[in-house]
Length: 222
Image (cartoon, rainbow, N blue to C red; front, side):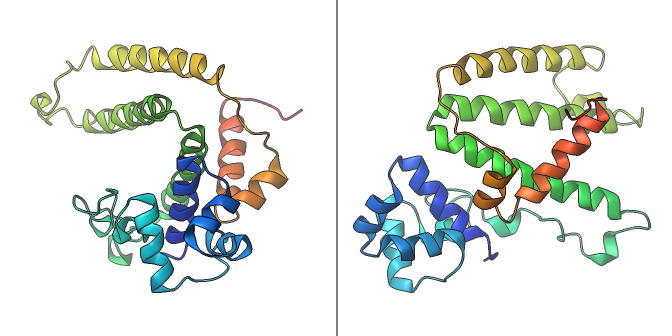
């Protein structure tokens, strides 16, 4: 298990359930201070707590440990999903360091976004935000795919000359729906200090990505 997986999943499940750390600690038979240490990754839990937490949240131990992407742990294993280093050194060509770093920025930043979405408890909002990101990846992949005109377009359902407009339209619709939902949800206050405290492993990536994105769109920090 990656060092960050268990604390992240444990925290996410509690917030998804909409219960306080104090209440969760009481139900799990530990002190709030100890649960806080588990959620922050300061201390490692024992097997008894692991099983108790899995039963309490109704998930498998594999999901709790980050070994499965399915809560019941029966579908796709996390080991089947490659991470930043899955390709190995042999698959990294010269000059490939920048894309690897950018991938880490994106993956870590998406982790923060997913956690914030999960904290809202709005499944429809979570699904819409996820689909928005998926369409964005779809567009980039298809542009790369279309870079070779010999690649068969039968790979896709949308026609080559219309997929861009279709994707842009779907994303605009999702943006509007997400914005409407966010007007009805109270989002917690955030600043750099808060983000670093809540996401010590990912905040730097997120803040760097925000700076890079603003630079790319020509924005200047006030």
